[in-house]
Length: 177
Ligand code: K1U
Ligand code: ZN
Image: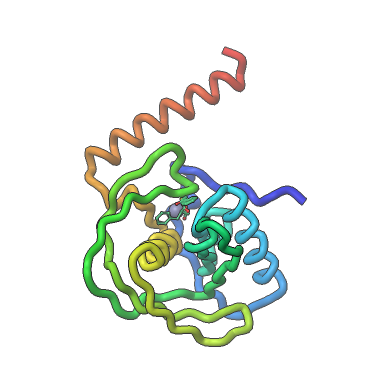
């Protein structure tokens, strides 16, 4: 089966606020599996359901699998929420929905996150550094926020213009001009 497609900026569906998951169904389990496949294939260290066009509060994260000899171990989080945060850290972020762009973003360096797993069990996770950054980035997706919203307007405008030019060129190439 083909992998689910990752929506790309400026797709308006990335700007929707996702709805909480009330019941974990087979469909949700299948979506979580598909999201993990997409994340490892891209490759990425996280993915949020809206990025594959599903506006529900579901994320997958694995910030360790890229290390040498590490195994793939996706952390699937249902209705994740940050309940405590502290400190600041600047991290150079990218996003599978924001092609060809990276920028430094300032976020909390430590977070406490509450969520459920696919078995419906409550989880509480203390995260720091890259994992904390990744949780915040993915939860932003659930609220329709992209990391480019957290950088200077100048950098965001420059990227937006470059991306629009890129899309225009792609359209021209497709229509044979
Ligand atoms: O949400 C996404 O689009 C995934 C994104 C997550 C993220 C990256 C950096 C900081 C915070 C959150 C990515 O995974 S971009 C790709 C990436 O960071 C990466 C890919 C391969 C190896 C190591 C990192
Ligand atoms: Zn992203």
